[in-house]
Length: 575
Image 1 (tube, rainbow, N blue to C red):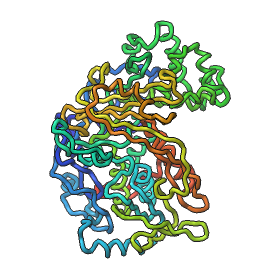
Image 2: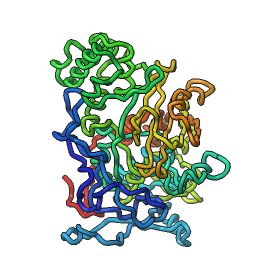
Image 3: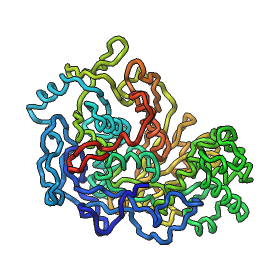
Image 4: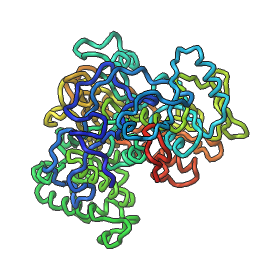
C-alpha cells in the first residue's frame, strides 16, 4: 500500500513542521489557479509496519503517539475568491526548490479572470462557442472528481456552475454571516461566536475512510498536494441511552462495557475470521458460502447477541438499516475489513477530515481538471440543455450555446430526469463544549443504531472543531443527520440533540434525495445522486464509478486517474 506521508516534523517543501497555527482570517483558500506548495500534502501516517492487514480490528497503536496526522501550513496572505478559469496561460510565480534543482519550467496553467472585467463577456462568448467532449454542470464533489478524471484522460472539459462558489451541496460556508443568511436566521452571529471568517461550516456531514475509495482517488490523482488532513479522534456508538467508544486497541476492547466477557471472546473469533477471509480463497470460508449464506447466518455461526450484531452492522459495517442481514454476507465482511484496515493505518479511528472543511475537496479536484486544460465558469446561469434527436448536443447560457458530446450534472439541473428517493434531515449545531462522555475529543463520530431508538435507519453525529480550522477558537460544530421517516423530522433526531446539549445555535435543513431516471445511455446525460445521510464518502464513490462506467463503457480503473504528463510541478511523465 502506498504511504501518504508523515505527519509533522520536516516536510518536502511546504514548511509543515511545528504546531498547528490558529485558523487564518480571512480564510486561506486553495483553489484552481493558485500556487500552493511544491510537495505533496500528507494525509496521515501509517502505523509502524504499514498497517492495513491486522488479524483483529483491535490493533495495538501504543508505538504511535503523534496527536496530529499532519500539520497545516503557516497562514499565508489572503487570496481572492475562487476565480473563473477560462484560458490557458503560463502561471506566474517562483518555482522554489524545484526550479533551483533544475526542474523543467514548462508548466500548464490557467488564466484567472476577474468577474468584474469588461472582457468577461467576450471571453465567455469565446469559450461558449467551442465544442467540448464533456460539459459538467455543478461543482459538487462528484462532479469535480469526474471532471478531473475526464481532463486527465485527455477529454476537453467545460465546467460551469450557477453559483459563485465551488462545492454545491458539498460546500463549506464562510464567513459565518453567510450561513445565517443561507438559513434565513434574523440578525447576525453574536460576538461570542468570534470572527465570521474563522468559520468554514460544511453543509453535509462526511468523513473519509482512511483506506476507502476517496483516499485512493486523492492518492492516484495527487490532489493530496492541495489538502491537509487530520485523523478523527474517536468513533462512538449509542446503547441504552449512553454512548460508548468503539474500541480501537486491544486494551480498549477488553475494558469496554459494550459487551460481556464471553461475548468478547466470541466477537474476537468473529473478527479473526473476518480478517482472514479472502473471497478468492475458499479455504478461508470455514463452511460459509459468501454468495449464498446471509449475514444473519454468519452471526448465528459465531453465536453473537443482538447488541453485538447492532454494534457490528452499524458501527463497523456502517449500514444505515438492517436490510443487510438477509443478503449474501460477502459485502458485509468486506465492509468490516475496510473499517479494520482503515483503523489499523491510523490508530485512533478509521476516519480522516480535511483542514478548512469538506469544501476543500471539490476545489482540489477542480484544480486538477484546470491543470489538464479544463475550462471553469462560475456564476454562470444555465438556460437550457439542448437536445437533438434524444441526445444532448450542448448547453445554452446567456444566449450562447456550448456544444458537447456528453453532459454530467447534479439533479438540480435536470429535475425532469430524476425521481425522489426519500428525504434527509441535517442539523448543524454550534457548541461551546466537546460532547459529553467523549473524553473531551476535538472530533468524533457517534452512531445511534436504529434498534436503539425504534427506527428503521440510523442517526449520525459528526463533530469537528477549531482544531480543524473550521470554527472560532474554543468552538465545536456537530452535525446530526438521518433519513426522514415521519412527518416530524426534528422529533426523529431528538436522541442525538440531547447528547449535544447545551446547543448555542442550530441550523436545520430537510432536503429531498434524488436519483436519476435517465441513465444516459441514449441521451448521454449522466446525473449524480444526492448526498445521502451516511457519514462517509463510500456511496458517493460508488456513484462516481457507476457514472464512469456508463460514460466510458468500461469498468472504473484507478490507474486511469493517474497524471499522465508534466503538470505545474514539472514531474517526469508517470508510467
